Amino acid sequence: MPHLDVRRRGSGTARRLLFADEPDPRVLQGVFALLFALDLVLRSVGGSPVRLWSWPAAGAAITLVACLAAVALPWARLPVWAVGVLPVLDVAALGLSRLDTLSAGAGILTVVPALWLGRQYGRKGAAVGGVAALLLVVLPGFLYFGVSGITLSKALLIVVVAGWAALAIASALERVRAGWEEAERGRVELAAALETIEHQRRVSDAILDTVDVGLVLLDGDGVYQAMNRRHQAFMRLGYPDGHAGRAGQLGEVYAEDGTTPLPREAMPTHRASQGEEFDDCRIWIGHDPRTNRAVSVSARSVRDEDGTFTGAALAYNDVTDFMQAMRVKDEFIASVSHELRTPLTSISGYVSILLEREDLPRQVLSQLEVVDRNADRLRRLVTDLLHTAQADEGPMHVVRSRTDLGEIVRQSVRAAGPAARAAGIDVEVEAPDSLLAVVDPQRMAQVVDNLVSNALKYTPSGGSVRVVLGVDGDRLELAVTDTGIGIEAADLARLFTRFFRARHAAEQSIQGVGLGLSIARSIVESHGGRIEVESEVGRGSTFRVRIPLDVEQPVAPG
Image (cartoon, rainbow, N blue to C red; front, side, top):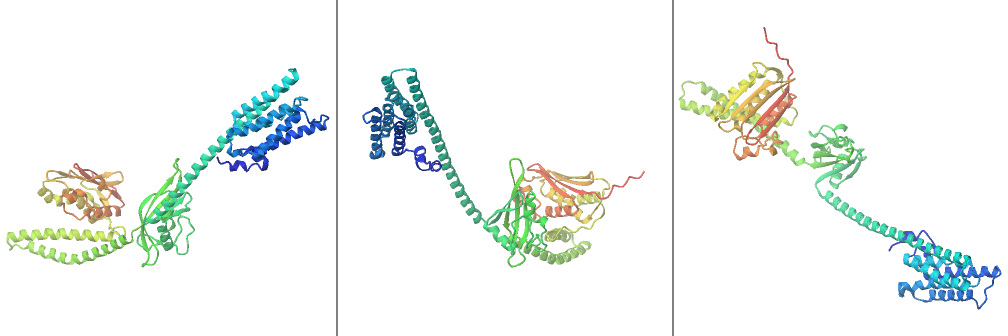
């Protein structure tokens, strides 16, 4: 098993003794031989020279044989247990060397081969070392010197110390090996995880650089953390002199009209760095009309498990072609509408003159009424198209004056009466005799007409339409409720979009171009109000208009 980090902690002999997976028997045997020789030298110096034919000499001979075996034998090709013979021979040598004087010095050296056995074979080796010390050191001493307090004390201490040392090193090395194994598993798992993360990063980078959408990631302080290749192109276009990598920097970035420089607080990155989330924020990047691009920006916040803001992600979608197409379409609609109004005015004028004549046959008058109705319908459509073309130029222009909205609502319902009777629809109106407000009377009449005509258009024969006008606090409220086909939930979000028609209307071939509600919303918003809708398929819809009431109600006389 790998153990390089542990090995580096030691050096030379100590490292080879303690941290090698397979201890070098030559080194271990050499260390023991040196200690054994030191014991013999100290005896001689202390006045107990070793005779050639003596037990210590026999122990020295065994030690020499063990050293020669440690150097000469190919231990790598021998069984694992074979090397254990060397420390057992060392124990035997120590046992013999004690038989002349019961030397305490030689006895304590028993710890060395015991440690070797514990290091080499673990707990089993520690047991073998203890048994070897008992049989080869203690028992020969008892047989040679007899059993006494001194021999018993020295013998037992040798066995206990040698066994305890061998067991201790065996246990310690087991823990070290377990730690090595755990660390190695962790290293392998970490390496695999890092490799997986790196692979996923490369895949993610490839995907992000492939998509045709600019992507930006900000941290909690508004610092750019990452962006894909597509957004880098936007950055070069909007910041030709460079960008400092922080949200809200000014550059060649303009509002939706393409000419108004965008202030810092309106910059999508600044708004996102403040925790704001939004969709379809349209801006223009670049000042050159030949190369500038329109983009639709969306932003989402990144928050931790506590809800704390930690960053934001923004997506920049190129909508240049769409914006240019919308501009061309609006110019075309405005041009065509203006061109149509002149002949329509002439047609309507001459039809009105003819209808006033009393000498025309009834059949001709009936045909002229058909022409008049269709001319009026076409005139309304042209007017709606003109309003649509003007919608992108800013808020709809309104001319406010003191107006009785109650009378406007009643007139609208009266005008829709013939169409309602022809369709078999019952129309009810609930409005005060007088409800004054400062509004544009013509525009508000257009709102009521659009909502009432829509209700009649989408309500089948036998249904009903109810128009209610009243005051809710400081706002006036107009509600138009029908029992018609209703609107699907998926269509509600786009209901006020220009030229949008609900699926039910298209399937049932109900006439219309999808402009009435869009125009009504523009008028209501130009008055500082809002328009809402509640609907259920098959049960009908309620359109509710709320506009600030700027004129107090007159006090009734009396």
